[in-house]
Amino acid sequence: MLERALKMVEVAISKMDSELTTPHYAHEGDAGIDLRSSAVTVLKPGETLVVPTGIKMAIPEGYVGLVWDKSGYAAKHSIHTMAGVIDSGYRGEIKIVMKNLGKEDFEIKKDMKIAQILIQPVVRANLVEKDSLEDTSRGEGGFGSTGRH
Image (cartoon, rainbow, N blue to C red; front, side):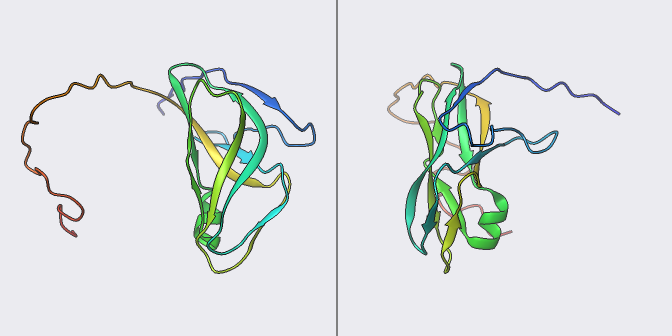
């Protein structure tokens, strides 16, 4: 059995409400840290809400927090998270933009898991303006250009 070393980075957190569960990984080997609601609300079909988490994070320079759906809510209730980039310089409360793509109300309770955040390294691009770009086999083929199978 191969042992794999996981790279660890320290991320300071501050809870704005002591009653909230401290963010943590639910299982050994999970990529996402669960984020919870600090509010009680109902997300109606077609509605978009910004839901507070009551958490602030100090993501180190060179890293980003990427916010993703909870897969169970996405699969069972069509709940989607949006605007999921938390930059390293941001120190305010993390809020989750949630969209109900389903047909039924989605009740959000205080301290309920609503999203997950992955802390990942960032590679910065050095953008170089050119008059033209080198050609590839795909070229300018857009949506669906690689075929269905």
